[in-house]
Length: 250
Length: 250
Image 1 (cartoon, helix red, strand yellow):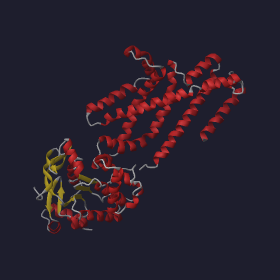
Image 2: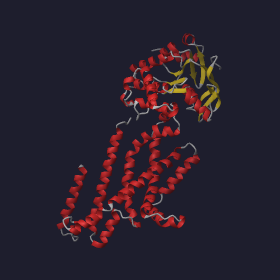
Image 3: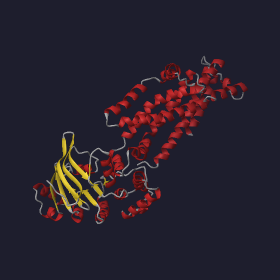
Image 4: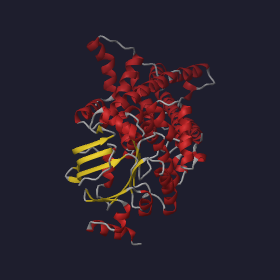
C-alpha cells in the first residue's frame, strides 16, 4: 500500500508540471475525468487491462507447465536425454519475443494451415518464449534440493513421480518463487508487444488513442502508470504467496 | 574373508565398489542372518557407509553379488522392489522432509507405496511415534524439534514401512552429546524386537550392549568380524587394536 501512495504522489507531481513552459506543455484535458470526452478516453485506455491480464496469466500458466516438463529431462543422468533440454532451451530463448509473435501469427498459418486468432497467437508466442526461462528456473530449483531428500524418498519406497510430486517439487517451488514472480512481471510487460498484431490490450489502446487525440505524452504517461499499478499488484500477490509458503520453510 | 550366519537374509559375495578410480569396497564378502544385530565400525573413509548403502542400492556395486531376501540386486524392477519393501534406512543427517509435518513424514511412504488409507497410515504412524516416545509432536514440523527428536522421527518413519532389515548410517554422529542417549535407547529397544539391524556407529557402549557381531573395516576391506566379547577383549588384527585404542581411550 505504501508504494501505491508513492505512485499517487508521482502522478500528482507530473500533473503539477502541467503549468510550466519548457516548450512542451501538458494537456491533461485529454484524460480529465471531469469532462465527458476525458472520461471516455480514460475508460478506453483502461479497457485494455483485462486483455493484458488474461494474456499474461494464460501464457505464464502454460509456460510454467511446459518449463517444468522441459526441466525434468535436463536432470537426467543420460546425455541423450539431457540434450533434449539443452536444445530446447538454447533455441527457444535465442528468438526475440517480438520475432516469435510475428512468426507465430504470420508464419505458422503458412507452414501448418493452422490460423490462430491474435489472442492465442500472443499466448503461444509468450508461453513458448517464457518456457525456456522457466525450464532453467525449475532446473536450478530442483538441483538445489540435496541428495539426502531423494535418498530418504527412496528409503520410504516412493517412485520417481511421487518423489518429485511430494518431496522435491514442493521444496523447489518455494525456493524459486521469487524468480517465478520475476517472470510474471516480465510477461506482463512483454505482453505489450502483442499489440503489433492487433491485440486490443493496454498498449494497443493507447496507440489508437494517440492517433485520434495527438497527445502522446499524456496518453503514454497514463499507459506507464497502468503497467505500474498492475505490476505492483502482482508483486504484492507474489510476496503474499511467499509469506504464506514460508510458514513451512526448513 | 567369509563371515556369516546360517540363514542369511543378506548375502554379499566379493563385492567391489569404485568412485571413479578410488576403490571404496574391495572384494567384501559378508552374510547377515535374519534377526542378527551387526555393528560396523572403522576409521572414516574405510567404506562402512558404502557397505550399507550398497545393501539398499543407494550405491551400485560394480563387481560381485549382493542378495537381499534371496533377490539379487541389479537394475531390475524386481531388485528395486525387494530393497524398497525389505530395507529401511536411518541417515546421519536425518533427511526428514522439511516441508511436511512429522505425521506427514510418517504416512507418505505407507500411503503412496503401500496404498494404505489415511486412517490406517495415521494409526500406524501413531503406534511408532509412541514407540519412539514422541506422540505429542505429531503435528509439528521437523525444524521445531531437537536433533534427537528428529532422529527418532526418522527411525519411526522407517518403522512405518515395516522393513525386515533396518540400516543405520552413523545415526548419532550429527547429534549434540546430550541427545545421543535418547536415540540409542530407542535403538536398544528396537534390537530387542528381533529386527535385523546393521548399524554403522562409533558408539562402542551401544555396540557392546546389542551387537551379535562386530565388523571392523579399514581401507575398503573387512579386517575383522567377531562376537563383541572377543572383538573388544582380544582383537586379532593389529589395525583393530589401534582403532579401538583411539576411540575408547578417553
